[in-house]
Length: 80
Image (cartoon, rainbow, N blue to C red):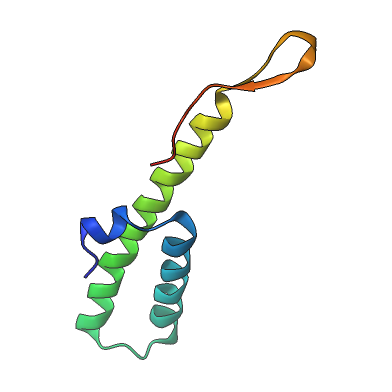
């Protein structure tokens, strides 16, 4: 099971890669029921983590504004 601490340390790309592995394992139909339930729970947590990262990126992009003369300025925002 993925811990909240493990999730916080994962980049979007790492979480997405693990989520793709989980989907592949579930789609194969070879995992036993208990294992399927466990990795499904991990998949749900990874999905939520990816959505959080995407929302943070969306908010950062929204902060990009056009300045005088058409110059692009970005307000400081951090990805979590």
